[in-house]
Length: 136
Ligand code: FES
Image (cartoon, rainbow, N blue to C red; front, side):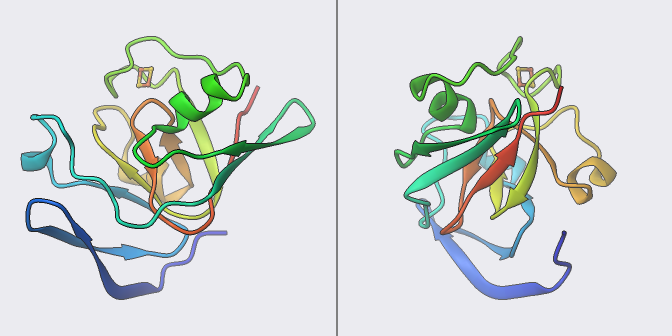
């Protein structure tokens, strides 16, 4: 499920920010770069986001810079949300494949992240594949 092996390829972000990423992991962007939009965006983006929900699989075209919540809304997949600030956790989804960078995270613990959970309202896919699951 979760690959603990770090790939030190480094992802270059605009504004001279770079970070190491791991395959199949959630990466929280450095907080010092979170407060002022536009946010640094990953250089790698998947062509689509696969969403498992209600026993169905949805293949949604992904537009670079969108959050997972944006992609689901545009694709007609209902997803719960509330604060859309990374605070409440209402939009929590489980990552199945690919890495997701979080613009803000004030609710998920390291344990949650290690278990594959991420926030749809703040999560930006940063891998060549992205598959998530809506629970409930
Ligand atoms: Fe509150 Fe995403 S809607 S954390």
